[in-house]
Length: 85
Image 1 (tube, rainbow, N blue to C red):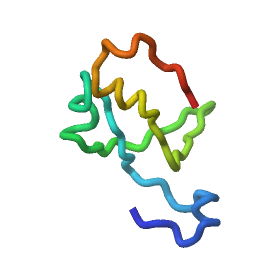
Image 2 (cartoon, helix red, strand yellow):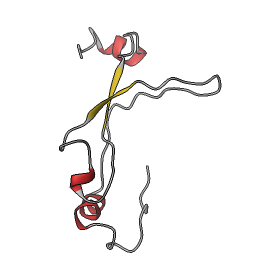
Image 3 (cartoon, rainbow, N blue to C red):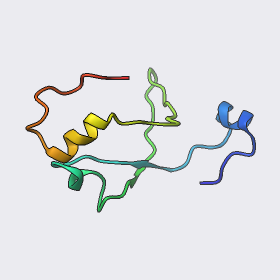
């Protein structure tokens, strides 16, 4: 993907949307279930209905305890989803 010409254009989203979007599908348990062979996959850009919007995500993060949960599997910790943003 080519970066926008300027920060103003980037913030205004004046560039056309790409046909594909990178996604990290999660299927199964542990790190082996993230992505395909440990990498994101290209997925079609979603389309919006009349009462929906498409939101651009510029950055994401994962809590270190959530990363630990992925590594250890379903048995630990006993509760999930405690810090949402």
